[in-house]
Image: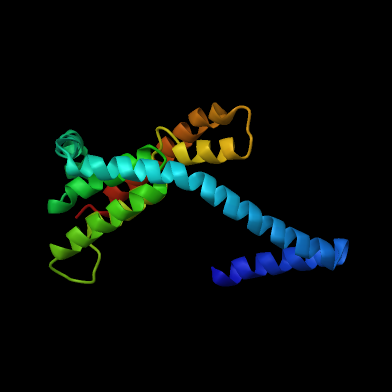
Amino acid sequence: MDIVFFALIAIGIFAELFTKGGDAVLASLIGGAQTAVQNGITMAGGMLFWMGMFGILEKTPLMRRLSKALRPAIRWLFPDAGDASGAIALNLSCNMLGLGNAATPYGLEAMRLMEAENPKKGVATDSMCVLLAVNASCLELFPATLLGLRQSFGSTQSAVVVLPVLLSSACSTVLTVLLCRVCTRR
């Protein structure tokens, strides 16, 4: 993958170098770096807010209630999750709100807890594989990060993407769950 990204960047730089010259390449590189830093700072506020909210949720009885509400789905998807069901519930909740970066610590914690109960250390269980696949498909009910990005770039209709994101992520998640159920049957 590194080679692919390096090749794409190199091709872009050489194309701009030959069509617009060295000054344009330098201006593009510096401008892109400035935009990346500005957008990162803009998105950090929202991300920190949601991570803080989920950190508070983790310390309250709401965590147990959320875990209990999601228990049937978690038990069906992750039959050998054990103590990881709470972290899985928070991971899935963050993903549903479009907060992929906030979901990552909970996904890692769920994997750590599942590995602790794993009889074959270092070999992923079916539940670990399903968690990874469901995270990759990521059902988004409210794409908060995407809406924040669209807003930061000055979109006048930031929310126009909510329905397409919901439909496409629902389709990918349903397909992922079906494939996982077929592949993990014994």
